[in-house]
Amino acid sequence: MKVILLQDIKSLGKKGDIVETAEGYGRNYLLPRKLAKEANAANVNQAKQDKATAAHRAAQQKDEAVVLGAQVQKVVVHLKVRLGDNGKMFGSVTSKDVAEALIKQTGIQIDRRKVELKTAVKGLGEYTAVAKLHTDVTAEFKVLVEAE
Image (cartoon, rainbow, N blue to C red):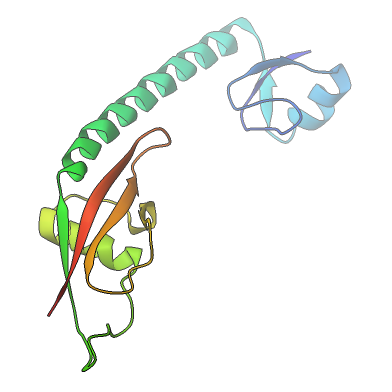
């Protein structure tokens, strides 16, 4: 029996795939649980259109990420931190702090969970951070930690 998957199923395939399954598995398990729909002519055409639309949308998102990455690579984020009497920092600088400073200073909206510091920020100086904008696109930018 041919079915079109409506969700990712580990043993069969990904959403939108047209797969051949055993008759009983398809009728008694996949169809009642709405994990798949029967692969008739109308459903196959709809699945192909949906796949083409998803591919187009993914290509657009990747293009937007490349443009955003080019903007981010030019940025230098300045962070002011408090220092103690002996010149050591109070606390530490996290990727969340860097992401918030990036948004505040440039207006570029990047999710804080997608920003990573390459090395731990333990003092004043210049560090490198990476923004993961898409599965295939990353952008490195500089973080300059200065005394307040």
